[in-house]
Length: 312
Image (cartoon, rainbow, N blue to C red; front, top):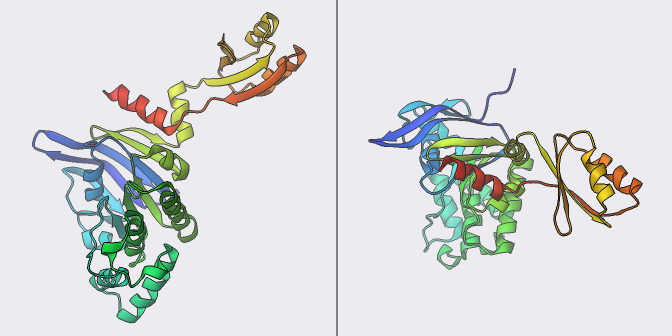
């Protein structure tokens, strides 16, 4: 029997008057998974997150986190879930430690335990030297890392991150991405990541879901979604010298080949399976030099744009 999903949404909908913000959403996220939650502004991502946090009730359907119904047991859900919004609200006149202590008190954590936990977490996010510095003096990247430490104070099982690297320099972004991956790998925390920086999502997420106009239009790994766009076809690009008519004819005769096209330097082969080994044999037998061979992969950005355009 399959394990129960940590995040489990079934036919989840939210309607405001004539506006359907979320339309019969089905989503399951497993323990320790980093799930990329994507979509344009107004797609329904924030509304979905609010329903998962128990901050707004669904019109129809159910949402559960760690087995608890988000509408009926919102306090239990909040105890197990950490949320980092796009714009983090810290008290600028308080230090990093004081801000985190305030969060610990709100969660009923005893002071001695909280102090130890705060020191550990500030070390985890690389901010131990600025523990007693006022947050108003922090850069955006430092605030984001402090925000991650802050949501971890209560040892959540699930963490929802909204644009955690937006407006941060490449080095700062890399640190935050590494931290997110460590939380998943080393602590087993389930993470839902909402971001418009698709190359970052592709780098760290196990699966992604694309939400457009309240509907989940695509769900799976980047590889799975790319193959869906190709409708079971595989595209292979090769660069060969010289490119002879005999080579082109031989490539077309390989079992599984659908089409062979030549541009200036590349030969593009469309087939119904992976025939790279057959291609290499044909090139060698034709006394040609194989300079490059590449199985064409879709980037998450290409996948996102294709699904987005299909809906529109």
